[in-house]
Length: 444
Ligand SMILES: OC[C@@H]1[C@@H](O)[C@H](O)[C@@H](O)c2[nH]c(CCc3ccccc3)c[n+]21
Image (cartoon, rainbow, N blue to C red; front, side, top):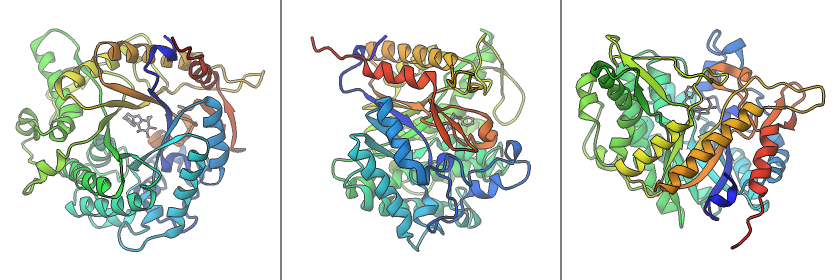
């Protein structure tokens, strides 16, 4: 499998997010986010790690763009930090926050790298959380105001917009599982949060189109295909419930089907739908972003409210203990193409954590990660050849960075970061990706 097997106009990028790489959390007027609060709360992150400095990208972005150039990517997916733009979440604008993204975008364009901006990658301004957070409908309106402001300032140069990164994570991990910020464990709040996140997306789509000529707007979902642990009908039904919990709860409303009836019945908890919300949420989009890491294998369980249990399977697992299962990406792409028929699909994240170390020769020989990328790209190609509307791929991540509750211990980068010195070193996987992208595209 080589680059020239893919369409010549296929997008090849790397992805990051603001809180995971920028640092400079109190610089130039940035306000606190729920991840500042959460990561500084004892016991919430491994080793008490936080994003105060991270990869110091706020200051080192020219060097990081040079690395992207060296890797040969033609696109870069980053996120805009809401708390830099609107320190209280609404109202007062912080011009120095906007200035950073102006500088970043201009530097990317100068290097011929297309900027893809995610408006929300989990760093909700703390003051909005204090006023109710995503369980409050007001937060959806605040997001639309934020989207309006950012796209008015960057929309002349940034044409590709992702409204939200993984509403499932914000709603479920943040408000029910409690392992992500703000760390609530309240099922009803997680259901309301999921609705207001989708509503926020739907309110923002027309705003972005109004402000950005030639905008390409979408949303990024973390989707995992669910497989039953056995042919037992109870396990098959459990897999269907998992699929509703992880995938259909978001895909169905976004594609005009409303919330899945089986899940509404299972949850017995109605989202806080008002008026035309479902029409707003189903605003037509130009692409679906998918973050794929692994599949889920589940069996039946009486555990309320989801009534499934994960089963650990497979021979190969990453440092996150996620099964390496590229076939799941193929199955997912084919299903989405058939069942939801998005105009285009971009893999907005795919990658793996492995315990990287600098060898005696100064290199980082992350051959497992090279293999992970090769296998997943091969299945992307196969899905594309079988009709999936796949138009691009962003590797997660450009740099080792702050891996949320796991802190800095889990490394996903194509580029190794020695955090005390902030020195960057391209890993074997980065060199592999560079050579893959450099493959001479010989015109027939
Ligand atoms: O965990 C690797 C990456 C994160 O660093 C990204 O910020 C985030 O977009 C992202 N999503 C997923 C899959 C969902 C997930 C995230 C974190 C923890 C568990 C599951 C994996 N990742």
